Amino acid sequence: MRIARAVPLAALALVLSACASASPKPSLECLVPDSGLGQRIAMGASGAAIEPVALSAVKAPALKDAYLVGMTFTAAGVEGDQRGVWAVGSLADEPGLIAAVDGFAQSFTTWPSQVAGQQFNVNEPGAKDALACLDAG
Image (cartoon, rainbow, N blue to C red; front, side):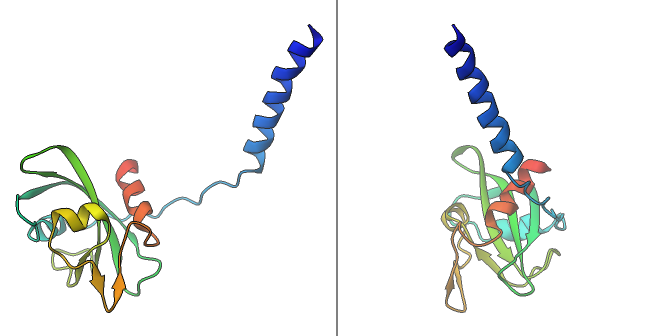
């Protein structure tokens, strides 16, 4: 019977020590793009129209003067909400450069996925943060 009690206590001690040693993730600085930015991104739809539902953004850590925009959107003929990440030069209605960063952005829009020889993908620094800001908003 003593062994049965020791195992749960040892497991609890292991869990508590793991929590104590884990460093907290710094809070994200989520930014709010202009309301028209989603429509500008949607203008690049590849085929069926897409309709913005929600947007959030972060400063792109690896790109000078750029932001990564996470957008939840619906697409005609596709069930449920979709989410993608785009790089933009500004959070205003006239963003200048728009590039498709992750696979969803590349699949649903015709915006380039490469700028100045740099190929974007979901592992772009800040891309997952842009999506996390959507969840936080």
